Length: 139
Length: 110
Image (tube, rainbow over all chains, first blue to last red; front, top):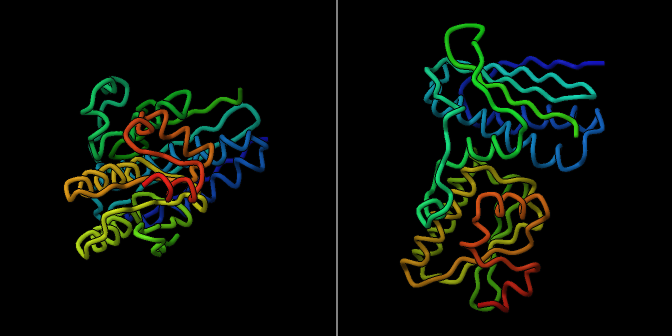
């Protein structure tokens, strides 16, 4: 069985918790490990949504963010699409070795997505904009 | 989600209920900065009722830690669950903050 959720929200960070809650409930229903449903999926999805809302759509509420979450027994695939120009998610490699990394107040979002999911990739958007796909395989 | 504050001795304890994420991080930041402005210098944030934290929430903690230190104060953390410990370890922020396993130990650490 595969479940697919398709959601469309205005560019407002207040929607994030509701979307994350919907997806993590399904994550638990598919009996993924507790940590996947309480850490990996909620944090990675929150990061993808806030990137789309804040950086992709610049919080312009006339612009929308589309979320597609597909779950089955083998994998969780999350796609988040905004109406912005996007950025290169694959070449991002922060230097985490120095004090500068500890002191920075932003810039950990993509880093966390990549640490918490098996794959983070930019994929063709269904419309004008940028789509990011996050994949987590059942280990 | 909500943030509640109360004083224990000379430490201001902040409880974070629910998530600390992009949608509410400014509320926490402002509440703590208001107390810093009023003269509080010792802050302990207790995460025993916290679900998860995103990068914005982590960023606010870093920002508050800096601002409090600039004023001669200290921000310490307590009661991180296993998920939150993982987040702090992944980002190496466990090396920036003094983190206690319980509120009592956190209070005693000042």
